[in-house]
Image 1 (cartoon, rainbow, N blue to C red):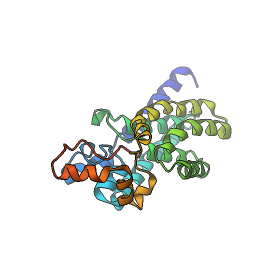
Image 2 (image 1 turned 30 degrees about the vertical axis):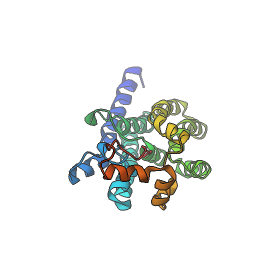
Image 3 (image 1 turned 90 degrees about the vertical axis):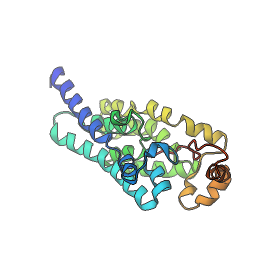
Image 4 (image 1 turned 120 degrees about the vertical axis):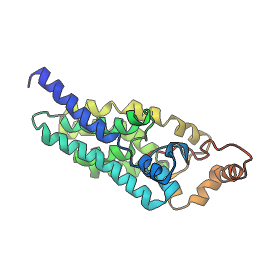
Amino acid sequence: MNNSKRTARALACAGVGYSLGEINSAYLMGLRRGYDIRKKGTGNPGATNTMLLEGKLAGAFVMLFDIGKAAVSVNLCRRLFPNFSSAGETAGTAAILGHMFPAKLDFRGGKGLACMGGTVLALGDFPAMLGFAAAVLMKTRYLCAVPISASVFYPIYHGLISGNWEGSAILGTVAFPVFAKHIENLKRIRDNRELRVDFIWDKDGELERTGLREESEKIDRGEIPDKHPLPPMPN
């Protein structure tokens, strides 16, 4: 494949991935309910904030949608461009970036965890990475640790398993954006104000531990302004 055709196919894969990636179901669900999810709860348009605002079922739907759009991007581009060895990696990376920085939402998107999972699933590396994610989560208890560490570890793992180091390099380009998206989470961990994964089954306990319940009550009483009292979490 000559360079011009390869570049054209790479751009096409990136375009497909980005276009699907920027479809934000959490934002659309919020609009249907009459609010902008970027101005409620965590302020993050993703599955965790949807769960916080609309319940576990709605959060699960958003997570599955985000996983699905990345997986569809990878599989679709692999079928459309079978002679481009990095079609899947290019499309998956673009889907993650499209979710995180959607042009339609002024580049204010989610944090990429579910889309990263969909990309890993479609590329066939899900069992190993699921084990990696579980180990990180058990060790840290913070969801944000999973995408930060996986964005560095996974491209290396994929290169070793597939031998496609070009594709691995493409996947590796999300590492810095993912880290940048989670700087506030890291600051909140430092200040003991980041919600742990325990929030899923012990919401009240986590709100008490972080001191966010008292802050929320003050907001409800109008004593302090609502500035997204709950900390941003990865999706």
